[in-house]
Amino acid sequence: MNNDLGKWQQYLLLKQNPLTANSIPKTKKYSIENLLDFHSRFDNVYVKHDTSGQGRGLFKAYVGKDGKYCFSGFSISGKPIKQCVNTIKDFHRILRPYEKFGRLGRYIIQEGIQSVTRSGLPFGIRVHVQKHKRKWLISGMNAKVGTRATIDSGILNFSRDAKVISIDELLSKHLKLYDIKKKNVLADLEKLSISAAKTTDLHSPSKEYGVDFGINPKGKPFLYEVNRNPGVAAFAEIENKVILKRIMKIRRLEKKG
Image 1 (cartoon, rainbow, N blue to C red):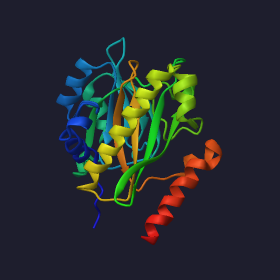
Image 2 (image 1 turned 90 degrees about the horizontal axis):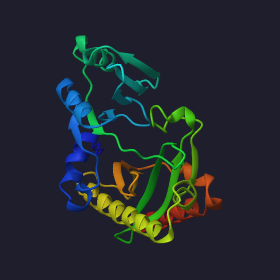
Image 3 (image 1 turned 45 degrees about the vertical axis):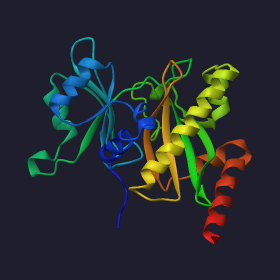
Image 4 (image 1 turned 90 degrees about the vertical axis):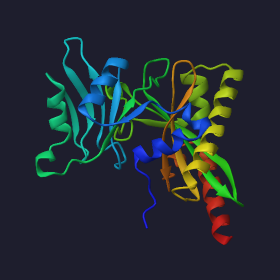
């Protein structure tokens, strides 16, 4: 049985939790009407395929100064697309090329969070949560910072230029947070991640989750997505693999029971 939740189901689930509900971007099911509504309310919005991962079927959409509808991202197959069109229906046709065959695909629309460093580079945070002796714990965090090439879309998954760094380097060097603020942000990330893991585990059980965040200019974390059975390769690139070794140790202990 596949217990993976789609992005829309995940949103509805996290919306029921009082803690996570206040920290997820505004989200609606995709439709032309909803996309127009979001364009009228937010500078940038993201259109995401409901079940795809690794940045596939993910677009940043906005209205240009000339009134055209612009979008930048990746098709379901991972093909880069950057284009401006005259009408919202033109975007719809590119997003759903197989609609005439009755294969629509499901998408959601999400409020765009301005999660950028002091120098304007997009970044994202991954918090790794594991269950150990029936208790949830934070086994590690990392951050991924994009390059100038990723500014248009803000999408880091497919960028070979994105760099994995420690959470401390992100908060101290790239965001220049003072110690008390940094401590508060870390506490918020931990609290939200544990809460998201507990909530998700009720409907899509797993022994570990990767929880993805952005942080807006005011320092408020926004929870993007909870990943079931997350990869850990990025942790090999930071802190002399200390976090990676911790994750693998907990996995071994849990396996032994």
